[in-house]
Image (cartoon, rainbow, N blue to C red; front, side):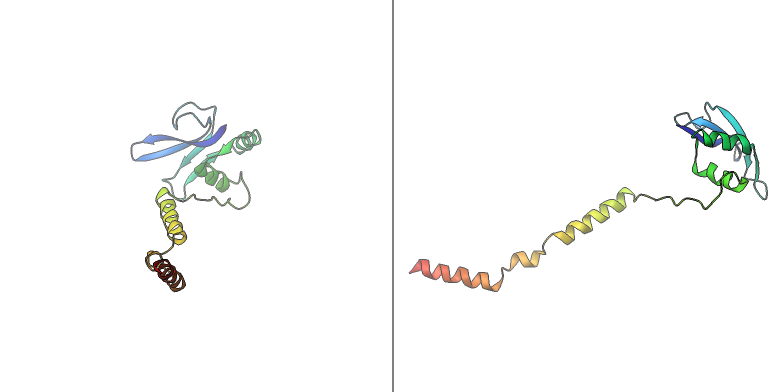
Length: 133
């Protein structure tokens, strides 16, 4: 699958980015098909130079933008409409906590196991008396 994503360039601790079209399996700074533009987050406001026509063309061919590239494309006006809501999956720790609380809710309390109901205790006592006679 093709992705429109950012490729890091620039000095150490002062990155700038190129907006590129690349295969999603390629490394971040690896092989790419085409450069669509540049993004500099250090200017005020951040500068975006983008070939909007080529970006729309690649998206029409099925290229999916990464989250960061999608924000840049929205600011540039290539993508219109509200940003889609991304559903965050719970972390493994949250899943374990939820599972533990669900198990605790399903298990009977230890007090109920320790003391049988009064009716059951009376029935057992009657059976014991009958067996003794």
